[in-house]
Image (cartoon, rainbow, N blue to C red):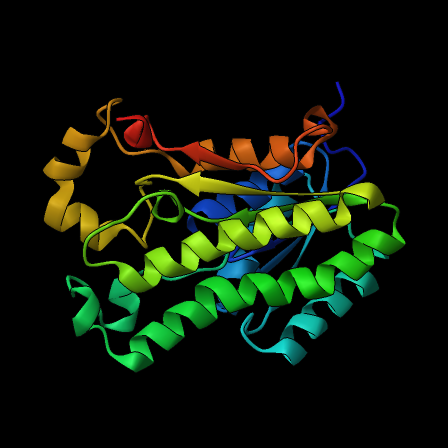
Amino acid sequence: MTGMLDGKIALVTGGGNGIGREAALAFAREGARVAVADYEAESARETVSLINGNGGQAISLSGDVTVAEQVQSMLDGVMAAYGRLDCAFNNAGIAPHQVDSAGQLTHEWSEASFDRMIEVNLKSVWLCMKHEIPLLRAGGGGAIVNTASIAGLIGLRTSSGYVAAKHAVIGLTKTAALEYAEEGIRVNAVCPGYIATRMTAPNREKRGEAIIARTPMRRYGEPREIAEMVVWLCSERASYVTGVAYEVDGGMTAT
């Protein structure tokens, strides 16, 4: 039986842990050769080891996705290894606690924290797309999935910078989808709810019961459940899907 992405080349940023790692593993299971990029180089290598150890084919890349030259170098690495790019999952991101803004209201965020949040969660997505799209155009098309969040669809108290960035990712996704649809490039976003990852651990520890109470399925999501949506969106099974932001949130935004 062939996989959904047999013979495809996939890039995953933030692929060293959590959703990114599970997506990289899922791409490989579905037949893609994978480039795993992460700021934490050792984490990327660990993901690659898991893929290659299970009979897949992957390479690791490292770099800062907020720096244009390093993003270009990352894509150069993909081309040097595989000669083309077919799909990309722009997943690297950070949470408010990683910019020292956990629990802060809008007026309490520092300018430095807000700027860093926008730089990592929005600018990096744009930079990756800027360098990925020419490669997809040259190859006759492909698919991009950007990680947004339910925070890109609703407001969340004490998360203003994060919410602003994720709303903007959805707008960027929709605009790119319109611009490149005629060239066979599909651009979508995935909007995770509360997923059991390292990044969400502080929130789960502090507000776990409240989060579960707001989630109709009464549990946290698993990284693999986001990965399955990402792989489907990159496959030909989603060939008529572009410009959409898909919630994978256990029903939270339906309430």
